[in-house]
Image (cartoon, rainbow, N blue to C red):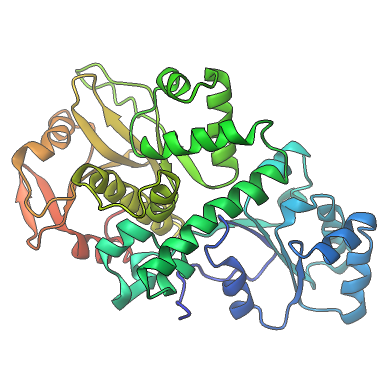
Length: 384
């Protein structure tokens, strides 16, 4: 099944960054069907262009396409010099779509990022809006929303795909690019960090549990961010009347990948695991809607040492929204304690709750949405 994606196709040269398997290539082929396609994952193409990058110019000038797609550009950053020269020579009559599943190699080689001649777009796993009638929260939390996982009807096929996905990621993104010296220690780190997904980071504890130095653990998280497997959610210092924590949280990009990395795919989902996975899913939806709809929000979380917390702080200038997420079918007044604190102190302008119940509620100036209602409002630009 092919899904209609939310991202609008740019009409000028652009970078498209997103994790492997999110559907970037399929989306590009649908939106630019006449484009010249250069796939750097094909060894023959990669080796030819590695030996002589000027072959790219020869290929393009041989057929003069309107669009050229270069897939996985981070594998050969030197090609960006050829791209830049062609853009300058043809005055944007030839446009490029440059995809990448890792920004690390581009940063490391100080790649030519085309001096403002290209916009940047991001691609995410399937959103609830894109899934439409195929959206099922239980399946999403267990197996994620990577297109191949969604399209596999049998549970065993979903599990096989996700297990092979993390093996492929380790082999291709980490081993081939030589991002780490010890792949076994990185694999151990991945398993422990997946278990700690959506929780406040304690690098010293992680180092102790994995038997890896604190500085190495910190470097490994940077690798995960640069290879788009997850990102850090910083703590927000609202200067409320209580002490606030400063440590970040880390969220992997897809619930199914989290469960695969932590070895939980073949186990029942516990209520505690479900809570963290639900947060992960909502964070992914917030990020995707924010980017696809060009809403301009920045995301944080807020917490005090005593445990008073708001899962997501969504900031745009002076407009700050707090969102609390609960994977329960009933909403208790205590769930909104953090939101109430920040509303009373006028640190946020709006407080929102999201839960798995079926009734929209209003409690202590907090609007509590059933999941389905929240997602519709979110993707219609009515939340952020």
